[in-house]
Image 1 (cartoon, rainbow, N blue to C red):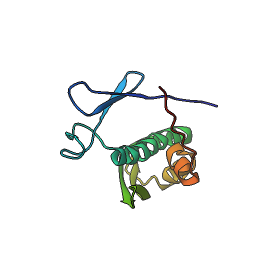
Image 2 (image 1 turned 60 degrees about the horizontal axis):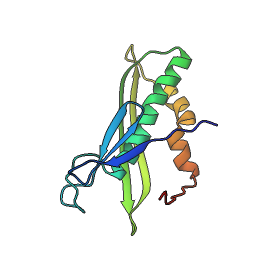
Image 3 (image 1 turned 90 degrees about the vertical axis):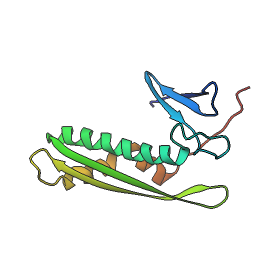
Image 4 (image 1 turned 180 degrees about the vertical axis):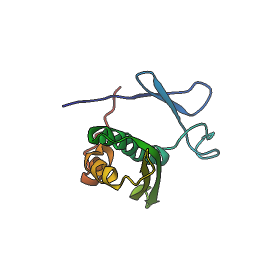
Length: 135
């Protein structure tokens, strides 16, 4: 089994958080005027959508390499539907445009990448989430 950990801490002088994994960082905040948010970074719903879309973009590349195909244009748009109280993601729609370097369609790559996308497969199957008080 493989595990990965990310960490987040507050950003001094703001109510935003800085998250990191290895040498990569990202700012997380609420929209300006919402619970002290200043709009300095992505909110949770945006990060959820980016997680799905980003994972799928990577899997398109992994899959194409396995198939011996060079990809050209990739465009992914993810829409997260939210509802209820507490607010929950109720559905996600990902629209994918992908072409091979020669300009021909890459539907075969998209279909194979669907099978290996960790985030979409995890969300579809549901995963247990534990929140613990660390002190």
